[in-house]
Length: 195
Image (cartoon, rainbow, N blue to C red; front, side, top):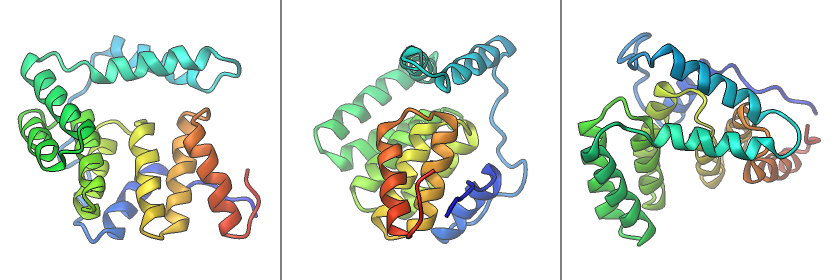
């Protein structure tokens, strides 16, 4: 069985529906437009992610570095506090710091992606899904959020939606071992052949 991943925007809408969340109206809360040179640089890095060989590793590191740049010391501080609390397993503190971050910087996709991780670890999949959908609205190529979404959907038993999330993530960054393993595992579970 060969599957094709769903188009991205309907996929994000399906995330909202799968978790019983209200789907935002088209164009609602559109993210700020990044400078043209930043978009061009990221476009080149995303193209490099798909290249064979080991060059993708540098592109991945550069993308993650670009995403982490907030331009604000207070945002950076809140992110560091949230990450430290998440690493320490203090989920309540992580959610608190990352909520302050997302309140302070509603257009900073990494804040939503990190808070989604904290919510998911706490077993709060509805808020996690909402945060992942927001992160993906702000940065549709956020392969971390897509892979995280796939893992969460797999955990709650939504195998087909999980497979879709991993496949969309791999279309952006085909070298993610976690997503590659998940596609193989989920394809077998659905009785098909991995692509």
